[in-house]
Amino acid sequence: MSHQLLIVLDFGGQYNQLIARRVRECGVYCEVKPYTTPLEELQKMQPIGLIFTGGPNSVYLEDAPHVDPAIFQMGVPVLGICYGCQLMAQALGGRVTAAQDDTAREYGKTETFFDTSCKLFKNLPERGVSWMSHGDYMEKVPDGFALMAHSKACPNVAIADETRGFYGVQYHPEVNHTENGVAMIRNFLYEVCGAAGDWTMGDYKRTAIAAIREKVGGGRVLLALSGGVDSSVCAALLAEAVGEQLTCVFVDHGLMRKDEGDEVEAAFQPWAMNFVRVDAEARFLQKLSGVTEPERKRKIIGEEFIRVFEEEAKKIGAVDFLAQGTIYPDVIESGAGDAAVIKSHHNVGGLPEYVDFKEIIEPLRLLFKDEVRQLGRELGLPEYLVSRQPFPGPGLAIRVIGDLTKEKLDTLRDADAIYRQEIVDAGLGQEIGQYFAVLTNSRSVGVMGDGRSYDYTLALRAVTTTDFMTADWARLPYEVLDRISTRVVNEVPGINRVVYDVTSKPPATIEWE
Image (cartoon, rainbow, N blue to C red; front, side, top):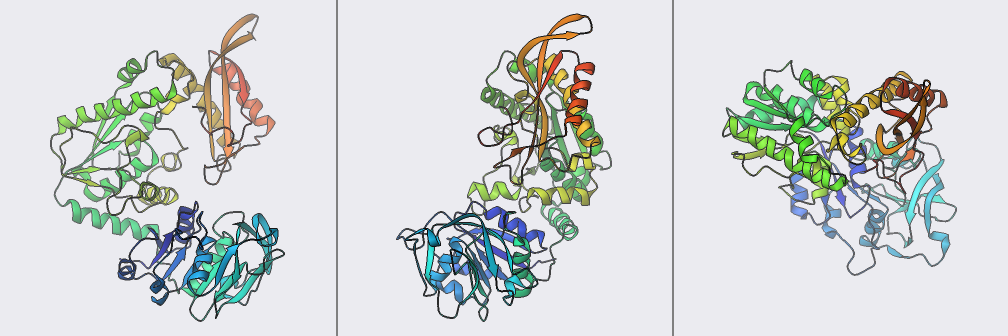
């Protein structure tokens, strides 16, 4: 099945992926392409519309990114966002200048007034908040364009030539701060571009399975399974497509959360695939013994993972395809064209050097993270795996501060399990972007029963976030924190103090190390 396509042309904007996600959320397939993509290539793709992203440049500068003016002769609608709006205005005969005073310079949440006769704002309120981030000003809009939105400071917040299907907005409709922003994007897709809404995950699953079967044929496929969402969904999709032709090597390094290794193995029981679980806990702990610096931990874990995988791969022999759980953000961020930089396992290890394979296969390379989760549900993976909390590649190794021992890891596993259970039982699991426990290297005096204790402090971390670039600490109810603390100090030996991290990102990071 072929899908309608919308192309997002990237001019260096920080929200390029978010724009593409919003389009796909509206049921339209979308790809991000660099602004340097040749016009002939864009034409061959036959998009139903184009969206120009924002960017850090000023369109009037000599070295600013531009497009072939013939792009406006393709006969497809265009939506320009921020820099993309100014670029379109400049290219079509308008004039953009630096704001001479604060009257045309806007940043942050801005009250905006909309002309709802415009297709972009059809059936939306006439007033709302939009998210601005521009220091340049459209001094003159091109002929044929009408002003369709304004703020108190700026008369040309949105412009439109509805005859040609050209629209420009100074604000960012893709971010959550813009009220009805997604509805505006939806209006562009359906009211202007004539979208059919033919992008569904069920369709994608069927198409992907057929494509994998055609590509693999009778060949053998090898996958390094980490137990994360991406590799797990990749494994399930491949298993559904080629069954026993797939071998998954699950390297259990002993750094996962409580019972996760068993849960991962159980999740793949329904498929007729070759599942190899390697118990490498002792090996990893030996390599990590005495290591306290977090970056050194990461490097050791990544390198050792690859070495273990190589050893298991040698037992299997030559395979035709090495599978990777690369997803679309990895492809975009690589900046590559046809061949993306392959995502290294654990983000540090790299590709194995001594695995005999002919070709790499990346069945998830067109999907965003939320789409990967949707596909996992379509494939029948259990929810505990599909909705798995973000988990660093090095696992608990960087959530145990200082040196690692099996005892410390087991202590953290038990405490973290209590924390996560109480969050879920309180109905807060979907409200929090990420939550986890950290076993600090700090010990303090406590009173347990009638005796004195000298044990570790456990730190709890919970944040709310939409993009993981910034995050705010979650305001957990006191009674929930009280239950967690009480259970941990009573049920987990070695911990006598529980603290809660109330630092946002920035200045902190989400993880501690």
